Amino acid sequence: MKREEAVPWLTVVGIGEDGWAGLGRAARRALLDADIVIGGERHLAMLPRRIAAPREAWPRPFDVAPLLAFRGKAVCVLASGDPMLFGVGGTLSKLLDSSEWHVLPAPSSPALAAARLNWPLQEIEVVSLVGRPLAALNAHLRDGARIVVLSRDGESPAALAALLQERGFGATRMTVFERLGGPRETRLELRADEWQPCEVAALNLVALECRTAPNGRSLPLTIGLPDEAFANDGQLTKRDIRAMTLARLAPARGELLWDVGAGCGSIGIEWMRSHPSCRAIAIESHPQRQRFIVRNCEALGVPSLQLIEGSAPQALTGLPAPDAVFIGGGVTVPGVLEACWASLKRGGRLVANAVTLEGEAALVAWRARHGGALTRIALSEARPLGAFDTWRSALPITLLEVTKPLTDAPTGDGHGIDERNGNERDGKSQADTASRDDGDA
Image (cartoon, rainbow, N blue to C red; front, side, top):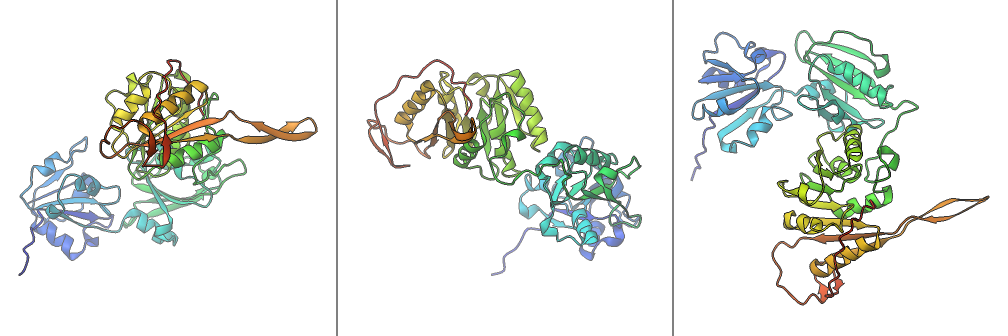
């Protein structure tokens, strides 16, 4: 039996700077048969007169609502290059069933740039500055990286050169492509520290072959960035503890973290650096530390981290439910653990660190009620003692990690073995203390 397939009402056509001449047969046929064509003014002007369908430019600010109003008609949308790469296709994929539309892509501008430079496309990173802050590039800067940056306007290349010099990447080779793929394509090649003021076409992209200058710093890909990478006033989860904490928080693609009592924001920042789709909300009441968070987010390439200025648990009200929660300070504040646990998604992870006896007692009591694992972390570093070296011990850290059950478990007597992690559970409850555990691990 032959299965009938629905005919899509919407065709998204990728078009390059070569315009109509560069379109394939299927794309031309879709435009000739369309009841209406929607796109940017520049793209609509590329169409020949024989396209009889009415043409509608995207509204400003951009909105797909007018497009959806034509559902049921034969609609064509024009988009730059590959519509599924930082294009309108990503927006439509969240709104339409796959049976309603299809895409006829043209070569993307990063693919064209890679071809011009003989760079393997799978080895480059693509960063868009369209609607995004320049600081987002900082997460990708490392020696040897090849990055294609989609500029927002003609000022972007100069801003990139200034940023690269500021970050110690002045030796980076910049290739600026203007009107890539069209008959007026041009390119400009120079080092970031050689940039001179000049006029650049609004339609451009910049290919970067990153090189650090002698004063540059290329941050590692692993978790546990050097402590000096973060501006802070001492309220910083130190490098080794931070790496252990993030390993237990276990960031996964697209997940949201609450960083409660964020200090300088190190945990939330490294959570977001683990994958571009990871999100974090930092909750911090101290004004100076709030400023540190903003500065560190920009410097380390995650400017989209959300900062909530306030104290838990009050500041947690109305926030989206997290997939994971980290509490670096304040575990003894009444209601903080309870509010975080109540908001945490089923299957989510809660990790809390404490350095005081009162904080440790609160975590022990919490584990007695909800299970989980406790870890004592004691680190020592070699430090000078006269003409010799000796071990200097940091304050020991008590770390609680617990996963929220997928279903409500039957209420027991609190004794025995926690089946989720094999830990012995002590049913004796411990009194919560009202004093704040401000020691950031």
